[in-house]
Image (tube, rainbow, N blue to C red; front, side, top):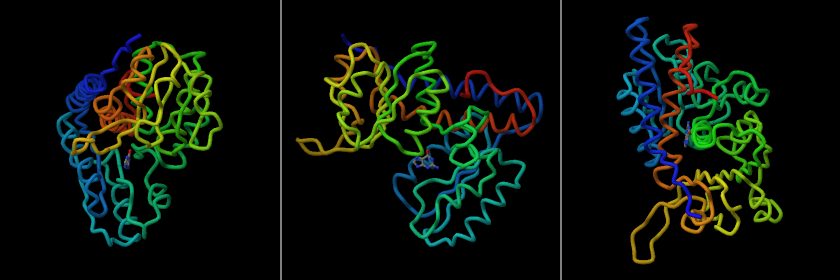
Length: 297
Ligand code: GUN
């Protein structure tokens, strides 16, 4: 079997178009421009790239983009004061504090100081609790993107065996909650799971989010399964230079799977598209207006 390649880049462009159309309607019919504020503390190069890309795409879909760059030695009090200001700014509907924060700042404290209604990352403890109890919440962007691709490929996910490899708060745990919400039978596996190969072989859906290059080989994959690769790892090429690989061994998995997301061009582009979708959703909720169809969990 050769897997269908799930084109995350094309799908993300479609999601951004939907978001853009909704933003245009909000402006035309209600005079409202959704706004996203991104806060970056320090100069982590990878974070810089993400933040620039977020700002650019926010503007491209017609939303207002507010980027706040703070020095690496910013005090916790100053950062909390900025979050408070954004919480109270009616032009800001979504707030994202880029992680990781410098070590002297308490990430949990900062994230939990964001107004949950503006928490477009879905990291606030209230949103985590709402998602876990099946209530309306803001949903973390990467797992939301994975869910959208799975629903698009399969239609209903009901009754499928899903194995999520990785237990992070950002991807693994919320992914498991979303799959459970769509009536999958869900296993969360991780680096300490006994006989991980046997666990993954049971899966109709595998979501790999462990941050280890090419950790999942093709002979762990049940023939015909759908493989969603959340990993983005830069590795050295034998001939020199580097390349990006996921958490699954692409060639060997693609030979067995029914469908697979590539790296790059799979899950990655969906994350920012879902951030924009969450911002428009937050804006609609703030104004008591109808939310866009198909862009929420
Ligand atoms: N750093 C890496 N991924 C993310 C993300 O999804 N949200 C935030 N806030 N920071 C990140």
